[in-house]
Image (cartoon, rainbow, N blue to C red):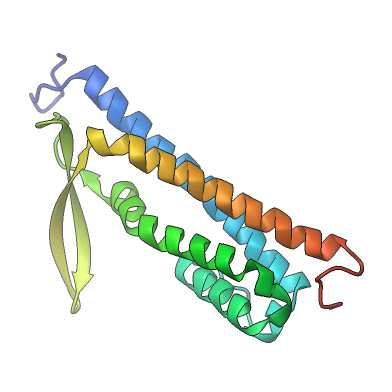
Length: 175
């Protein structure tokens, strides 16, 4: 067990596992959100979404709102509604945990009872509030699977929407 400059003992293998887990969350979320970005671009530029919003959404919540609105208001997307709604739900379910892990700070370099303590400053009623949470090593396999599934679902929907654009007489509204 090496000793950090502050005199705290920590285990290299435990920290390596934590850093790999956090890195996995970053990379896999990036893949999923990139696929969502492609979905938004196809909807906005090619499948009539531009009529629903003046500017293409950039942040996650507006992207999900835009996707939800397109699925609800554009009749030619009806066949994708169930798949799209499920994708939105998966993004919403995973986004807070991802946000905490990525934007939280590791509060201790030593694993405690199978997990690491994190601290996160949140803003509530114009005040910063410190919130602590744990990232348990036992929860990582499910989180990893959920993130992989999210990326696969987003990629799948993106491909299906692109096929609508490529088909000259398919579902595309001719825009």
